Length: 418
Image (tube, rainbow, N blue to C red; front, side, top):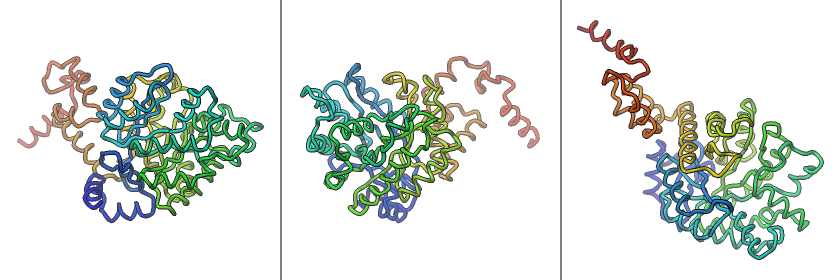
């Protein structure tokens, strides 16, 4: 572990001691299944804000080659992790091919496959046994999946009153709604909660990370920070302590649709209840009207959430709420989240983030376009825009041309010096 830890500390710009202490307390997690041949990734307090890209098939669109293209585009654009959320096609093959091709940690939501396999047996997911649920989880971990989302906090207590005091958008988490349906049909507690010790043993066996899913996250601004979200978070806080007692790596997933003015409170609440466990947020989306542009809505919320302490941002693509994303939309989603994470890193005092901005600014002032176009977050798009309409001058862009303020400033300063 010494060499990987030294590399990680260097990459994160922190000391090895800081990293070790964070891992010991559980405020930093190292994400890597012992069966997956990748470098471990540090997520948590004091490290660079990380971003995740969701890929995967649906029952309507299930093309492995297409998902492998998304994987490559996501990693090339800067995703720190990917999640395979496939629900269509040969799920086992798709997951294994993604794991084999990925150079970054891969996460999954095993409960989706439980539902798919139940359907193949001509029965509903709600009829799946506890053993069938855990068998699929173990299959994912044995394949090398680095982190699994498990909706353990959706308990009979946390959903109490939901049928009477309804939300505007109800339950928007697929995994959360599935566990609610299973509990109602079987008149039993959520098996992921009831048999949490079994889950911990599996995670420990494979050195995998449990990502405690937010099955009751708000799916609309009107539902933000309601009692169901908070009750689930309280249950998750207890599960975090249990996992740490068993030396199992654990992080917590968060909302969802949250208005700007509630983001700080949400982050502080999670960090308090979950004792500083790494916080993995979807967005959050700060308005409900962004369909077609939800990657922008998500980046606004993500930057603020990360500034207040979120450690890990799940990207959102332009097709969120509308359709499965295209390869290009995956790239756009990653870039948007990358910019949000970077903006937060600057505000949090990350020296490397500040240094790269300074290098870009110096290159801009020098009108060194080749350097600028290699340093920005999306070199391909920046280069395409720059080249589509060249200025009469080789030095300036078409925004200002001969009236370029920086060019004139440099000329004035040169004349004064001479």
